[in-house]
Length: 366
Image 1 (spheres, rainbow, N blue to C red):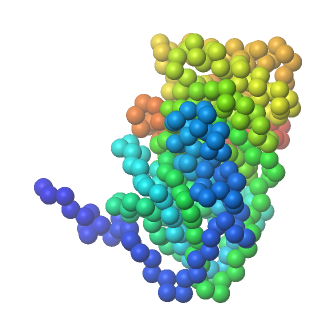
Image 2: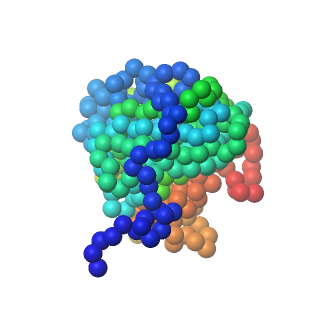
Image 3: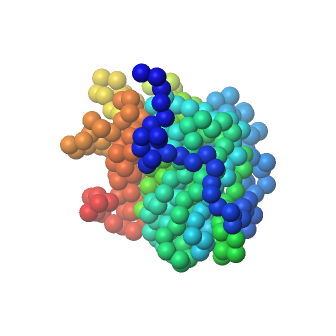
């Protein structure tokens, strides 16, 4: 059978190539009142990125390239417009065979409470399948009232510029605040970067952010989280409220992990002696292949405890994917589905809630 456009059979799967909004006004998110989070100097850099180009280039070619992918980037604002439009300018569009375009290149929109303590999914700005250098998309907002909005950037593509469109004459103001002035920093692998979430808001850091109202920086580098000295120095220099080490997966072998894992801890602790430090072992645990890697992470944790560090936390990756649907948690035996990311987030939310509030509930869903 010849290829056909399924949207001709099911209009719910249709994606408009152009938006219908004759009263549209576009605004550059780099200008007030928009607030951008999770990206490096977004108001002054010519394109969006996650870390300085000169630093990324000294780490590795892979980190250099991946630093332009906008995982963890967010823009917040408030408006009484009946709709929101995005116009994304993208230098190119990479496609993955095992990750939806809505996650790798899409944006999704959440509605926040004014105090920023709650945030719920509303709509996804779905990319057209044939786009090559960005796209436009429009989504309605419910009711004629003021909404606080968070829009998440793509996980696996670069964005040069982003414009937000509202109806002419609509109010535009600042977005809801986060509870923490300094972000949580996550460092790790493709899983950390968000592969293979169906949309950006389903990466585990974004779920944690919404549950606990925490700003964050995603420094997951797909296949390239290897704790190089230049990266360790950069990470230690960041101003942060908490650090999450999640790069077990990208260490080429056990020897490399052992040579770098404790070193990462020591480097962060030297500059940040008092912040919570969370260590994660890989979630796709197989006793015959990964037990030795897990021991390395456990050894670093025990090393920290022996030094008298009472603000260090170990999360066993084997504990993430548990329950009746544990075999539904990955796309390819490695990268989480949305369910897998939700299970990761659930475990880490409990740890962070204990850190922040002394709350010892067993589950975020209690």
